[in-house]
Length: 579
Image 1 (tube, rainbow, N blue to C red):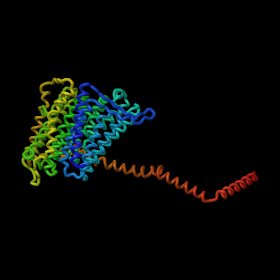
Image 2: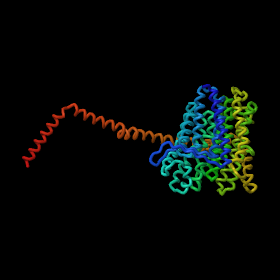
Image 3: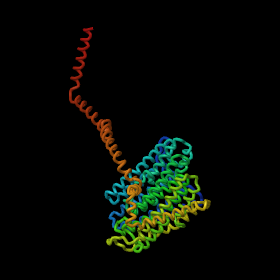
Image 4: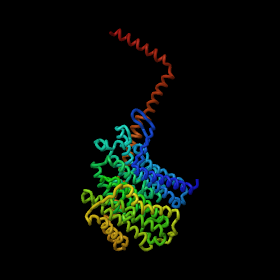
């Protein structure tokens, strides 16, 4: 099959299914319907292994977003990966990735959730190591091993739920809530979600996964891999009310939001800045979810997916033009050469900041006002608002470094006008980034939220945004003398830039001890005791017995038997004589 044909077919097929899902979503929402389909595969004793599908407004809407973004990303890849010899393999990997995510979305069953969950981990590894260099291999291994922790937690949930006779967790959530041993399930689900959505202490894999091609980053960081953990907790939210684990999750996700915001301001790699921005937004989703607002978390998940995919696509276009240069210090004034891409990038950045009437505003503003209204302590409250200010800080810094600052480019850069396939896909997402927030808020919430707050608290979001904008403006125009101020606080800057040393702790800190432990286990158990008492041991025993049997078989049994009987008779006669 031709390269272009598989791209176009995949785009058309996914886009049409997305449109069909949207129609279904409207129908299900209007009629308040839930459809539960179950197909029994195997039944033994009282256990039955079934394939289940849960279709409600939430799963249909999320599927529509995933399929739409993936169709646009595949259309974008047609131009972005034009020089790739194995483009068909790349598209097939992306389609497998999307299929794994859809399996996860529509599954009310822990077994099929695990298939989708593990499929995401496996295919993401294949996509992260796609460029096949040392950096990609290391990033892929970090991504895969971090996600394995979550896979093991899901396996333990599957084993524990055998007590209930079925793996369809939707039927047991109310029962589990009042069952003390089911706190194990809730703990395992939270850890699994934290690994997939890269919360502290599992955050280091998410910026490392930037080694993948940019279209993959646009897909992974908007609607698929990193949102799987948030979606799982949204589905399990009944089980996770009023338990201590959720208070710990609130603290960790708040710190993740804060840490990612600070690290993004110290970062100069274009893709890593956007990746850290994703990490910050994931912290926001997790924290509002742990406060008991799953629909708000879902709302922000969908609006964030649109503008984040667009942001990555614009970054990919800029990196293309810069001949694979990702350092923003070498960029500047690109808006004169690629105005349409700059327009898309600015709109997605403003949506990320929560500028009124773009997609991010409807979800972020609602979340922050609900936080202001909630009974929280000052520390969590400050984490929310400082993180919002930091979002504005790094977004303005990025825009000024790329668009406004002086022309910093090397003369080898090829500043041609944009590619039309890429522009078409970006404009589609730009349109959704503008309108998705308002139409989702009208559809998802059946009544208007009226939140009454004191005047200054109501304007708190605007205050922190303006402070963040001003700081971003100052930092982007730093000269040589102001850089020296950073050198005076070199250790602090290094600590903040390195994501609180999390990548080092996740790799060098753990790998030495764990790899040594693995080597010792392999040597002593796999190649030692296990060999002696299983495979090799059985072989040696059978070999010795066969040698013994063979010795008897090739000799005359009668001679041995008669001589033995004769000696026994002589021995008995001597014994009788002596007695």
